[in-house]
Image (cartoon, rainbow, N blue to C red; front, side, top):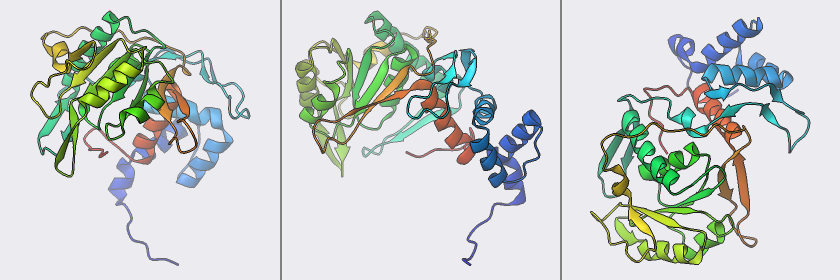
Length: 310
């Protein structure tokens, strides 16, 4: 028998989100679960009841509640979930508009950047307005050739608020590898950046972005965020604009969140490409949303005052 390395305090157990979830289930379904094992057994035995409880406990925002939790739970793949619901992926992640910190970013330049939920909503609103003016609509594809930075998440939220489908790849892959991925999905807008840092060395990626925009005829506009230079020369990228051009207005409009079916595509991910061109992996909005929130809130015990490191 191994030695127990750590056990949470009794107060920690009482305040844990999973304890609150068990209490929620007990009250909602007249149960008396006292352990994780009992909860787990119920979750796999009463699948529909479990996912309704998760939906309600984490507070999924939807303009229309589902009529049926799952059509045929034995149909895998192909089961239809939360039939009849209408919701928006980005709206659920932008439910707060306060001064609480939403993002902390520190790259290899060592410059620390913070963004509050209020600032996040405002920035997404400005960017979503631009995308609407570009006539980006539900089902269109928007892509990011960007490193892991705040602007990447903002571009994703602005895109998905309209019902557009988001795909991205990092700037440390060459333009050919990016075209192999993005070229398959015919994106309308490209978000990119002037460069990135690795081991203290700056890499300029504007030429790569220009090659990508040129190689994919469906790209109508490009938006370039800055990571290194103050205001980089983006003239070599056709139909491009600077990120900060959209943030000049003080007053941001309210975001018009498109209400969509639960299986509406939200992300396109890609396989590695080791056996030919990368394969597209399409993720539906409700499935990604509810499962990630379940993992973060219930399993990881993440609360608003916590910091989640990526």
